Image (tube, rainbow, N blue to C red; front, top):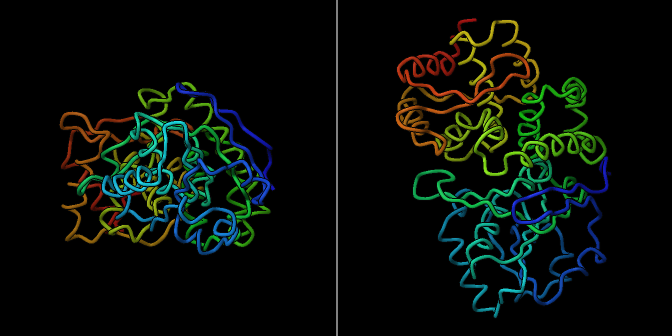
Length: 357
């Protein structure tokens, strides 16, 4: 079970609560005929309780992948809602991971100029990270997360049972995001998290409780100060500039959290080569994430395209690539990179495996 029973989050729109609870009919009784369900097809198949409890006409089932995280999917959901007599005083319930969350939150923010929505996160990444923070992001054409809004849910129910049916890659993806929070704050739980890594993979429900709570605590403290990602919160993009481009260049064969883990390692190497950290600091950072790293290198013939993807990142300004780099342990800063050739050379070193340590 989880370390805490609930967590309150302050937002520009409302204060909302994350409840850590069991998945049962008593929980589902809170949703009546006015609720429309947006549910991941995998969750719908694995958990018969949703088919048993909710009428089929109230559910929209989606294939949750990067190819469906689009404006077209949101338009299809809006058509479903209007045709099912959905009203402004009704609510949406998203059941799934981050992609289900994104399309539901975006849809809720635009239909009828905004309706209430709730979230039941089913992945570790969603439970430990994306469920709070207000952001929704959808892809547009060939640009990842080009469109989005800040539109928090009115309530979140985190049920640990969902973690039992996740595969190892899903757990590792969530671990990648959790690690990035721990490194940003230099959390006291880093060492025990690393030591518990294999136990987490084999028995996530038993071992993840305090680590999920710590991840959400770190994020809560930051988003309540900077909900709109203008100042302090920008450091949460550590690993994400490089990671998003890795997701794209791999045609999304590498999951988000694993791509972020690679992205953190690459960011650390860029910092080392630019003189922001020394070798000992690089190796300390590397030791905290190496158990979650996968053996992936962008091939030489795709590195030009990889740099182009970095140039399209939504955080960039003018002709600068804006990324988040470590300047020491627990000292993570937003950094503008103007020397593109130097960055290309460093990335080539990293991707070729010829690191200059």
